[in-house]
Image (cartoon, rainbow, N blue to C red; front, side, top):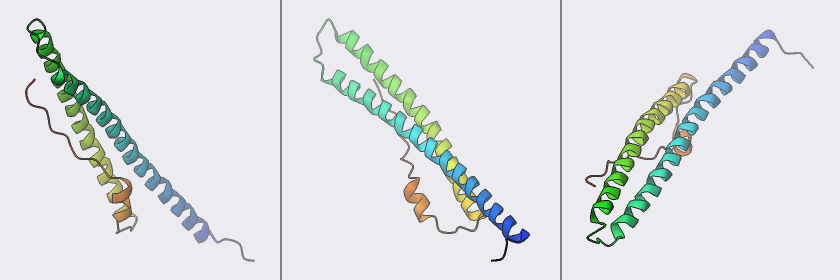
Length: 129
């Protein structure tokens, strides 16, 4: 059995380093997507609260309070949507870095990466309150 040559050792180290870099880049995208999904759940919970407010009967004495609560909920949701869309931009940039890293490593097919790192769409602001 023949021992490893210097070239074999260097090639092995180079491949290990490539795997580490690609792994870190993928983890960065995965973290950004997880944060997006978490924020999307918070937004959905606030939407449910707003829908409950919309089902409340408009009593004459509570009309102003209900309207204020709805406006507050819409403003909060829109604030969270703005935060979500900024995070979406961040996730898209991380995904771009992943693709560039893969390309630099000679990986030309990205179908699997597209499946694994599927970024949900941006959200639209709510109108009115």
